[in-house]
Length: 186
Length: 186
Image 1 (cartoon, each protein chain N blue to C red):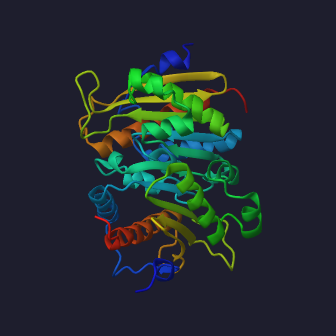
Image 2 (image 1 turned 90 degrees about the vertical axis):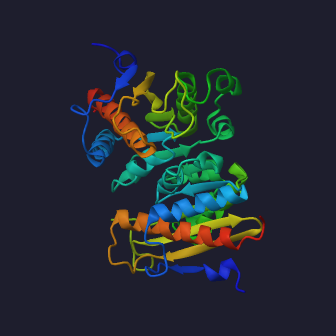
Image 3 (image 1 turned 60 degrees about the horizontal axis):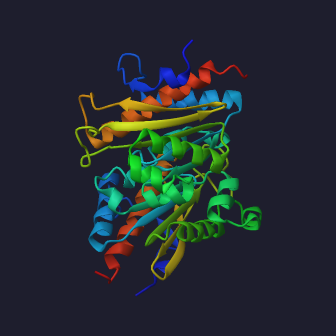
């Protein structure tokens, strides 16, 4: 069986396999967390609080939701998540390295069982040839696992800001549900 | 002219005066912030990231959005916003005193020009006779002003979790727009 870091290294949104309904996706994650008595925390850049807003839209989310940080500015990424200034300078805020540093900082700050970070380009501005609008990196820490995924959202038909944020949430909750489902602790 | 702390001490949602469209309400706030080169930060409990998700849904929000903290647990309210344990124990998490302590902590943490905190009961559980579901307190710091508002949302016709969160956002952005509009700095 492949490890999550291999499985999810490049995550292509598949509309046939992915949950069609974002409410269902997030409810599944919250129910799995409740079942296993796990907590969750989020550190968001481009989604700006959408992940935490969706998690806390589920009644009873207070049992599982520990902390949400929306660190939009580089200053806050450094101050609250201890993302090194050098990492931001060398790789840029939208990078695998920053998603990784964000999720590590979030884990230190929250101690949650499942930590998720997101950094990406939701547009409309800021895209380049190497990093088109729709480039999103997500970091995950769960037990002894830690990995980052590059979400392939620039192939979507609707590439506006709101769709990129919504699809990011769908991908992230899809990965989270899979991690929780395959977890052997009861 | 009455001061904001008097004007907004008890804020009754008025569907005739309030903006009908939440996207318009938040876009107005972001445009006013841009115009005045001000920054905004949020500390949310019951809205759980909805305020920051709405602010960052507006293109170019990165110019004005400094930080969003979703401090759902009491532990995080203490750790990240320095809300005193005693204040939480004496007044409870849903109180004017905690909204006030949250907005002060947010201002220290973010340094943003406009700081907003929210704590309330979105339900479905947790309501009492004194504090029915729909009781929400919001704290504001803007320049030398600091005040808290008790939002009267329990008189709404639709008193489910999602409506309470949405109406909270409408009230908060309504108050924010009024503060920014009446600000004399250009």
